[in-house]
Amino acid sequence: MSSQAKIYEDAPEEWLRGVRPNFTLFYAPFIANSATSREAAVSMREKTPSLRARVLEALTICGPMTDEELSEWFQMSGNTIRPRRIELVKVGAVKEYGTKKTRSGRNAVIWGVA
Image (cartoon, rainbow, N blue to C red; front, top):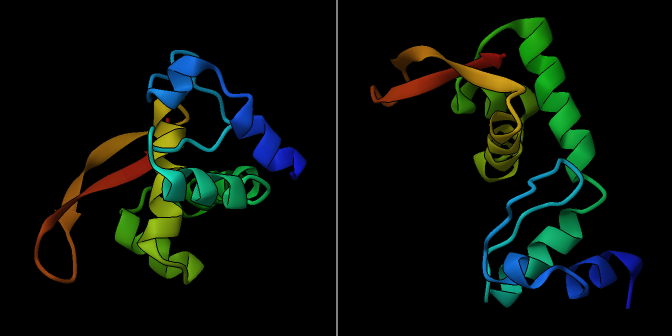
């Protein structure tokens, strides 16, 4: 078993139920009782802090953006970028700056550095 997988095997019981009272940037969250979610979190373990830092850096340098714009900026799926932005919001590093229309005409939140 890899050291990354071991971290999740040794996760506190409340984490396995989906309760993470002490959210930290060092753990990629996963959905309780979902083997595939846990596997995905383990697979992203090494990339997650780097991607978080890159999202924060992009928002610092380029200014506030929507998730769609972040995905376009990084040329990565929203499913890769969005969770990193959500984690930054949870720790107070990123906040909402308003809304604007996406290419499809729907309203989207504009995110920027807190």
